[in-house]
Image 1 (cartoon, helix red, strand yellow):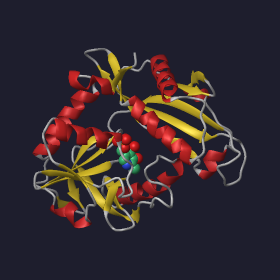
Image 2 (cartoon, helix red, strand yellow):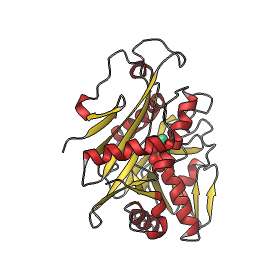
Image 3 (cartoon, rainbow, N blue to C red):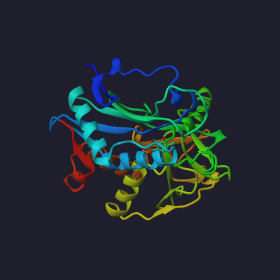
Length: 303
Ligand SMILES: Cc1ncc(COP(=O)(O)O)c(C=O)c1O
């Protein structure tokens, strides 16, 4: 089934959405993106878009950093996104890629005096980390600090750092990288946040630990506290704690909640999905598909 794209203020077939070779953002990474999931619910014949507004709030926050002024509110962006999903009509899980980018076809390293534009398209996309138990390696690449490129924004250019880490991990025989910050504390995966279970508590790096404050991370923290009464610690995490934790999992819009079975060739817990991870994963899977009445405010029907 062909996909469509909202591009230059119109919905066009995806293959017709083309930018020129001089477009500023291609050369300098001067763009911001989001990743949003639309989860197909076969029983309800509906696609539920998960936490749509939160994604666009984050996009617009990043736009301020890059001095991108879009002529759209969060509500406009949500509306456009729903329209393009409807037009594409997929009846399977989809991934949406919104992009706010410096669109002027002009070379020169800067943020000022450049036009910006916005596009968004859906594509069918199943599992991102296509493993039941992820094997991770700590990366030799470190997350940029806040005074390099703020890692709390999805600036396109920063993702070269993530790509270096991901490819290093794959070429070393792992499924995913775990990146540290410049202070040696644990930060996050190349496209996911990380959680550990330590002595019954859920532990995750804090926002100041050079992470993207993930929307899935926020979802899991909320569920852990409200549904399972778990204590959650957002704090600096030492590398050594990765190896002594009882459970570990990664969270992200693309990766959902993926259990980690091994880190640096050391088995996590007993090498199987742990009980805390399992219950969070199961509840999360129901919620994102629009099957949990309590959390329907997070799910926007698109069709
Ligand atoms: C570097 C990084 N960390 C964490 C995440 C998880 O964020 P979210 O749950 O909002 O998708 C992502 C994915 O967007 C990411 O790219």
